Amino acid sequence: MKTPLLDIKNLSIDFKTPSGVFRAVDDVSFSIQKGETMALVGESGSGKSVTALSVMQLLPYPLASHTKESSIVFEGEELVGKPDKFMRAIRGRKIGMIFQEPQSALNPLHTIEKQIAEVLRLHQGMSRDSAHARVLELLELVGLPQMKERLKAYPHELSGGQRQRVMIAMALANDPELLIADEPTTALDVTIQAQILELLQELKTRLNMSLLLITHDLSIVRKMADNVCVMKNGKLVEHETAKTLFDKPKHDYTKKLLAAQPAGRAKPPKDGAPVIVEGAGVKVHFTKSKSFFGKANGFVKAVDSIDIVAKAGHTVGVVGESGSGKTTLGLALLRLLSSEGKIAFEGRDIAALNRKAMRPFRREMQIVFQDPYGSLSPRMSVGQIIGEGLKLHRKDLSEAQREELVVQALKDVHMDPETRHRYPHEFSGGQRQRISIARAMVLHPKFVVLDEPTSALDVSVQAEIVDLLRELQEKHNLSYVFISHDLRVVRAMAHDLIVMKDGKVVESGPAEKIFSNPQQDYTKTLMDAALNLKAT
Image (cartoon, rainbow, N blue to C red; front, side, top):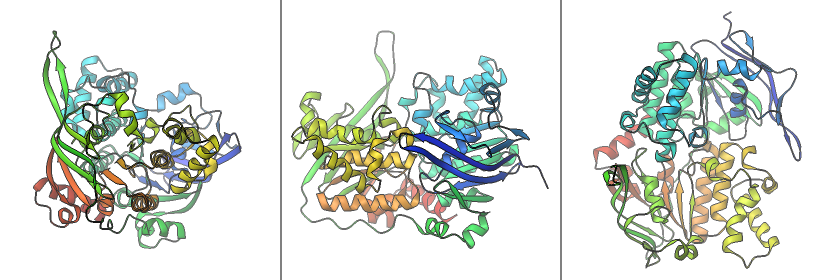
């Protein structure tokens, strides 16, 4: 029998918490052969990412610890307990990793070129010119040819999908023998998802590279994996070949995962609903560069003359590829970015209001950000994070009343209220997203921008969150702008649809009409990519 590239045996990982020791991974064993793709699937909090981080020895020691029986052998070498000096030669060179949240994984103080080139210069000793050439090659590989002119850009200047692709370029830079991909397509639109998956397959074959794929998207598992491990509550509940798992799942939990997906359509809203937010000719242009005298040399037209109407009880879905201007439009409507054109809230023009004048509107206008980890303060408990808005906007409430609302908000997003005493780093990506939704909803706003609110969630929780958002919308007559690259979720939520490309509206109208019969080639391409990916 062949010696596996990676052999994990009896892996158990404990975390020290204020309430005692929590076992995040419990007696997990599996191996990966050279050139094989192993998928690790399960709901948020099942221990998938913790297992992957333990391979790289990137757990927050001494808060996290392995049991004595735990073993992680890579190329015949035991990794558990190895010093940092040894692991630094492994990380990024022999084992690459694509992290789930690129905003928190990328250094905000360094340019894109510097961060990709650093991996090459550190592990291969490349010259500046050689590293520059390799960076350009990698950006082309991951579908970012336009970034060749923006090598000096910083992570905050890129869209979520662009940041994710930069992370993938860094992970692939040194042609690793094992690539750990933790939700590698979470922030990507469907067309780029297909490209990235095809790229990973191509590189895996060409380099005989092994792949440990961590995902909640079972359509990706079906497309990519040779073998599958299903995890629940830190335990391995099923380990089969991909074909066997999809054809004849044994465990009830596996069957539940395969059956779960957002379903149904948005309920028809009431006629004559009042307009909550209206945008007319909204423009957001960013300066590309400036001359020595400070004069703009050109502009990036992130949002270019867009009209949008969001009514009470309605959801406007906004779709398009990464960098199309979806998030920028949402931020402009909330007056979190400077813009030109008309923006009105309940008939009052707010486009020219300064920060102080906007403050009374903030309670009524909320947002759920795409990257929950980056938007949650690591120094505040969950209870403090959710209650912060209440403290600022509801000064009439007593501390006990605020606490009661925080507890109810956590229940609404299907989380244990006792978790309000814990901190963001103690939660999985999906759990952090639910905390973000609770923070937005606790103020009972009239208008909410949902920026990829389900992108970090597993499929079963996606369905729950979609149902929850519908329920909250119906109960409070909420107006949503729903930004997403997941067309299944958009179809389940949206009454109206706006399709964006390069800052412009390509197609707009009733959502079901566009989904059923798209008129523009670009819209058809998006729909085809989504359907083909899900059907594969």
